[in-house]
Image (tube, rainbow, N blue to C red; front, side, top):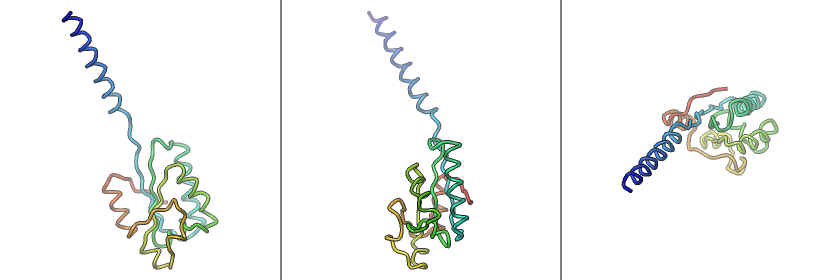
Length: 142
């Protein structure tokens, strides 16, 4: 009886170790932060299209993307931006996070109501870029 108990115990330990190894080997997505400071709406649209292409080619499960918009790039996140609003909603539904700089918002007289619900707000864009990179995000500038 004790031999049978030992066999079951060893089997239980082996299965547990195999599960832990499989879980640890599962790759984590690579995180990117995109700096959006360009004010040209056509260039903003192209940047959002680049994000869409990356998600399509590489896969949503392999990359996490955050867009931090400040200076002229703040307009890319506006609800009424005809060049980017639909893309923003589509990308947000795919897990892309969008952050608007409150300093840039104030300098352009924008309020929270000028942005869609998908947009988060940060006190300042440049420090948010640095914070995210310090946390392991890779820098991406369109």
